[in-house]
Image 1 (cartoon, one colour):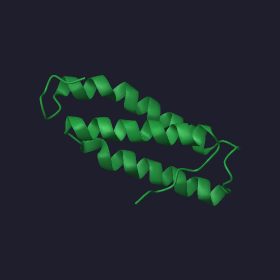
Image 2 (cartoon, helix red, strand yellow):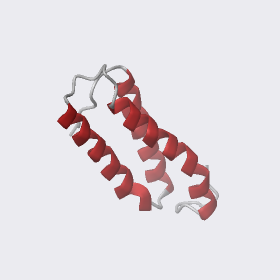
Image 3 (cartoon, one colour):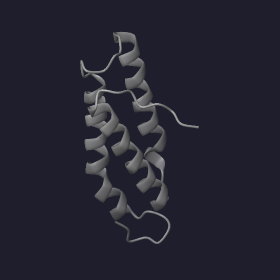
Length: 90
């Protein structure tokens, strides 16, 4: 993935752009799935939450953090495809 050692270069960011946009779109589509036990208001709230997470992390420059965020998005997408709502683990 990386040309930079710790911080992402412009090439690294461009390389991940398509992957991140694909995950973002798939997560938003999965939230609309009728398999999820959510009403309309809850679906809108989850979509807003997903948008804010992607927007907040769009400025991330650390290679390790970018990989972790992509892994988390893929995990959340796998849970959504099972028809479950991802829970926050603390």
